[in-house]
Image: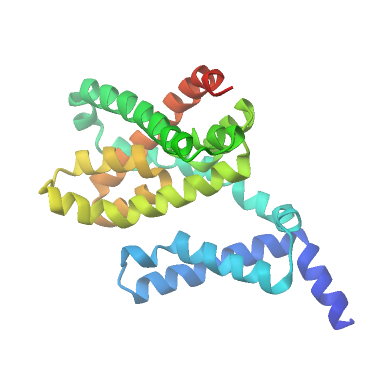
Amino acid sequence: MNPMAAVEVMRTSPLSGVFVTLLAYKLAVLFNRRCHGHPLSNPVLIGVLLLLGWLLATGTSYRDYMKGGVMVQMLLGPATVALAVPLYGNLSRLKRAAGPLAITILFGGLVGIVSAVGVGWLLQLPQQVLLSLTTRAVTTPIAMSVSQGVGGIPELSAMFVILSGIFGAVIVKPLFSLLGMGDDMVLGTATGISAHGIGTARVFQLSETAGAFAGLAMGLNGVVTAILVPLLAPLLH
């Protein structure tokens, strides 16, 4: 096969998007292990950078990449649901803290929306970007769906989600150490509300209990955001 034709097939084939995504993540995980789990070597961050490098090097458009990338995106929902497994092991503790947790997640979800949009408004960002910012604190599938429903840009919302998740994963442990807080339930709940799946994966490395509560907070915050954003979005029009 002509080399140019081979490159064109690699750029446009749906299987290329799947293969390159999985390869980038595998390399990122290996790099993270080599760095002994340092927050700045977060596999999502490194994987995104590797993937961006491949897209730029091959001239592959986002549209062509997503022909296969969408297959990986479909797995985000089942992966989120699977977080219920470690949560079940902490069911008794969850029942005892149900009331405070519900208030915390509701208030935290509202603050997440208002703070993100408030900063965007102060920076005089366009209305569509502000709408895309409303979902930055929830997991990607929920963020993209809700953003599209209120007139935002789903891809832009996904970018905000990833950036906030990486920032949360990097800062969560040093911040809690600085504040002298060591409760795994508090650590997990705060991380799940503010840093969704990426932060949840990070605190799972620190404590299974923290990871379980982060998964719970992430899921419930997604529900809260999916309800609040359509109610608050008309204020931005």
